[in-house]
Image (cartoon, rainbow, N blue to C red; front, side):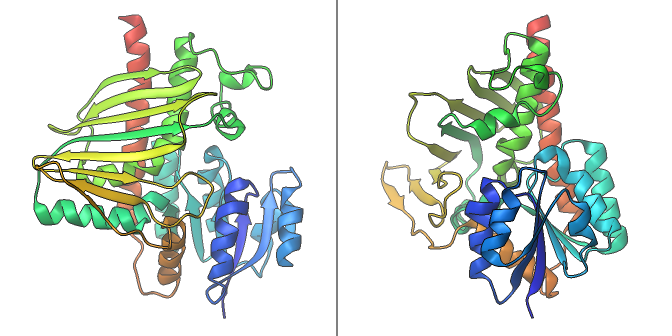
Length: 347
């Protein structure tokens, strides 16, 4: 029998990504209940699947038919909803990235899940992308010393991301549709922190795997209208994170580039909100020749739900310590980069 899934959230990520994946894994999962925050979108999504719908999380968490909960709400709600699902006695929780937006919340979530024996997986789809797995194996097999990592995001303007940066104080005081005033250092630092925990979080666990730690944030700034440039050092490695959203900007690009002592690895991830197979990976040798790696038909979204199924079946174990370390790493970087913005203004 498949596991009955209750989904907290009915946004574009649920409609375009998670529901199609779960539909393709019908032997393992069945969507039983979808809840929104009052938008009414859950009703239409649930109708297509003959599932129940509700507003808020109360009814979904009280639903005895819901075995596992998928937390696909805005980042600021994740920790609270995970704790509520644990308190409701749910067996397992799939949480969209990030796990939490503060160290304290991350600690509380992991402590609660560990104590209750709740299965927990954070859906960092780039980390589970088959192409990234091959790139990581290449780096390990060739034993090249990683010298620099760059994460470049060129995305079209998107109201979803504008709402993302308007979730918390002091930005939410702005008029609806108005972009935050990045000339205000307190606003700029807050926006940067939210973008790092909401967008850069896609790739930070993967970067941590090849360049662990954060010894120093070298530079950090916001780039109008919505963008950032952040550089930090784990040891001797320089990691640069760059995001731009321009009305007449370049085509969508989501690229991780890794320069080692003897080659260069580039991983181009598919655009957001589409199922387009795995990332495209190519490797440039010292003689300048590029080698294109094969792409998989399945992407990281499918892989993460397959792993979640393995956790439910007992074929894999929950890595609570690693989940907490990943959360602390991302939150620590976001806090340090936000502080760097304020430090630069005050210098």
